[in-house]
Length: 328
Image (tube, rainbow, N blue to C red; front, side, top):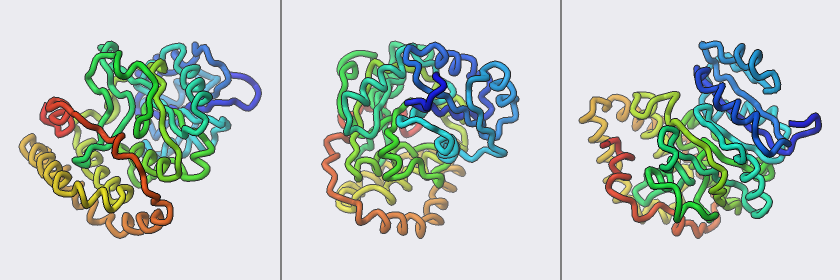
């Protein structure tokens, strides 16, 4: 944190998450890498988050929004004030290790063509377990957190190419953002990082991991893992990504598996009393279909053949699939 234009801008979004800010911002204050700024976007909180940050962390730049604009647009508003060439997104329910930023920046230097760098998120309460070592689509159309639930260590302890980073702790190169844009506000929350990873890859920007950039993550602390809000946006946004981003050839090839997985997810939601949110999500997709097709046509000229199928999530355990479908 210097008086000059910082190299890194860290955007932290919060919505009624005041209880997490002492840990999150306190961990950023003791980073070994110092050439950075922190932008705290208060997404219309009603718990005094803004006033608390002003008093406890006066070095943090505060962007206060009048209402909750969602994860995607909230981060976009933070980006509008960011000065760094490297943009880091960080969830408020995280605790970054002291070398977190140094490791991310080091990876960005080692891989100058990588537009995205994935940090290693570990379980807040069991840091020996991985929360996400990156993200990847599955051939069933679902989106997966790589390594979720696995022990920290091999094969996730060495840098590798992955499909994309979890936006809960990720570095994005501004040069890439200037070319393709940042998060799509239409997603509001969930899967916006998958959409951004697809767009980045279409433009030729791969993603590498920084396995020593470690962050402890509570996971779904703001919205809950099975709230109607979460169910609605996960079910809807999965189809947003499929219809907006997947190459036609890939989508048609795997459509039977995608439809079977969707039926299974809907059935589980109905059995668990969350069918209303899941059904509304599908109506939301139908209502957005004209917009999705327009976006798809706009991107057709950029839809170069993507050799990304080898980066799709493979060899998933039954437990991983059950977690994704909400069965455990």
